[in-house]
Length: 473
Image (cartoon, rainbow, N blue to C red):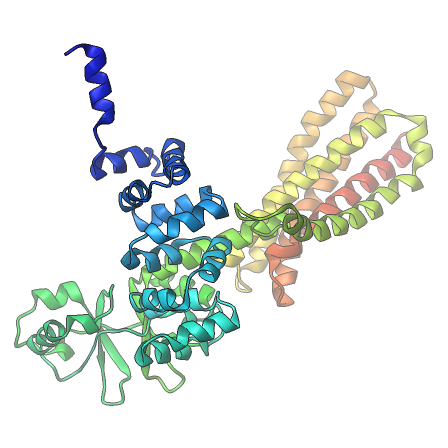
């Protein structure tokens, strides 16, 4: 056999699923463009068997990622080839916009079947994205027990512990022994949560009095009582905000925690996998809010993006117009020395950057509860000293540059002093703006940047021109 013939034979051999998995992901666990092209090619040829083979080789999270790289037409062709057992998990991994699109296209019966395979928290996450009519159809097609659990969770506020929790928990009375608990677990494994880390010990009123890690349960003797082994438990109120829940998990290094109703009864649990999603969601919201934008998503159209960003730009235009109006007051000074027009933007820009640095640190500290009323004054004075030190350092450098370039020591003093004033102001504004918004009950990440930008631009222009009027006579 010639080498050419051997190559052709090798190419014609089907790729086994293990090889497909290796072809699909790069070293960074991102889908390779070549694999996406293979899926598109199979769809174009109408090769359903090949499509199913390509999808089955991927983890549900990677299938969800694949959906984001495809157009709506290709997604529609792909969905029928997804295994029913994987559909629910893939839906829970999808971006919000894609999920809503696919949920609307799926028959109610198929959705109801998929939701049965999910824990309550994941099922609720999908159901709340449905339109009212579609939601009613899906709920009507579900078994009564699962429907009641989802309806109960939907009654809680959005972004609360009640929405975040799964109602499936492993609980046992305090008088049970380890053997009793193990026998209970093995007797009906189908009734257990899909993922759990602790057995919650409850009193006769079904109030949690302690928790026992599964690892400790497996190591203990059968005759040992749960009461003697249990550890103190950190309870989560059902109406607690999910950001507060994430803070508690991070502070106390929790893997799971019981959720209690106003009467103290155990109604569900939250596990660390849910908290990871909350932390990512809250972090993304803060990052986008600092820039005054919303998450566009891969499928967002131009109109949606413009509507989300234009209002902040209009507000920024208004504040900049006020800041620039300061120039008109001192236009005679600028006419006398054109160099001021060249140097003012530098002072303003440096102040803006300094303010952004302080603002980013302050918003993060507020989010992590590192900045509170207990240490606010100390942090404010610290940032003021930092602003003063940075301002003096930059003033020396900038003053020397201006003196060397323009050979005007009065102008060098003006720019140096203006830098000190503006960077100090930026530091003060960068810490006080988010603190003030937090005190007013507003999200400091949303509008702090607009106020800080306005403050540094306005102060930059005023400082340069006022000092020029006083010194450059």
